[in-house]
Length: 444
Image 1 (spheres, helix red, strand yellow):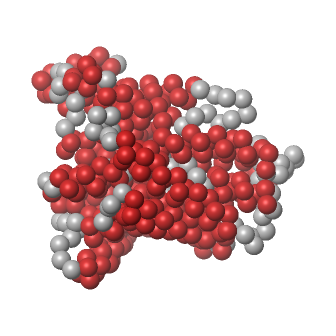
Image 2: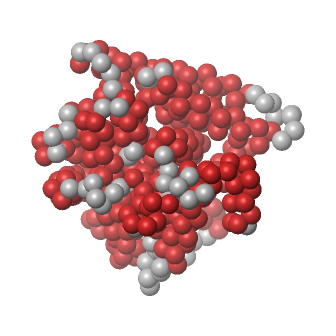
């Protein structure tokens, strides 16, 4: 299959599929990332969940970039890499919007709201202050870095919570359901904050003008999302043939168009918000068909996930990394994560949890991966499009922190959830079928 795919692409594009060409690099990166993810998925420790495959994908890209002979033949231009990551971001935003449950939004408890907002905002502000004074980033860039770090990773948290839920751990108190539900809102807040700061960072004019432009971007994104969401909610109508496939095509097409066109029009923060609002409103109107659309979007994510994490790894060059920069990035990440853990503990106080459950929730809210990979390189890509070396340096710092955050927190968070869950959460030994069916799984 792989040889046939390469042969077909070579017959169409010629040198692009030969060593040194973009398509050759993309194909090699995709297969290496898939293999790396499979290998990491095979690493299973007793009583622990498997390591996240995304780590293997990212390390595969990192190795392709930094092995001397290979990096000369496996090359992908920045414009190609940026476009592929933007498409992957669009898919992530669609899944986030479709994964939101309108009924759950109405019935959210105070602790879920606090868990969604508090740790993300506090960690973002902490990381921003540290990045400004330790790394020398301007405030707009510092807050961009903060919101990159502020998101928790559903790719790590949700599978681990489902394993605990199947084992009956924490089910009586609703701990797995709480974490899966709050994770979606946490990510949306981080992406929204990042896009707003991104628009302000690349605006020219006074601070007041930049703030107003950031607010304008939010308003434009929400308004466009409402219009597109209501449009694809009713068109195509349910009596047409292959309505699920058409809806999936429309939501994918409009989301990619929104993300790319907003950048072209110098409103980079509006595209992500537009996609989130559009996907949410459309999903509410589709009813039971939403699940079928999500399955098609999941196939698209299966294709772009290895590309996203592989490309993130391939952006990091050992030669260009300075030891002092890595040290400052690790220090910023470490302090921000500690503050996040303490904040999470405070957010779940007075919510009916015992001390063991509070400790578990605090550490389970640690892993970072998907959102960091999706938006960690956006600032660098935007800086490259402006052609300013200073801004590219800032963007590289943001990307380095995102890379280190995934590399450090994803495996540690997964292992901590697997170790602490059975020890700190109460196990329900016997559950009726009705109770099992009543458990709500909020998926991203």
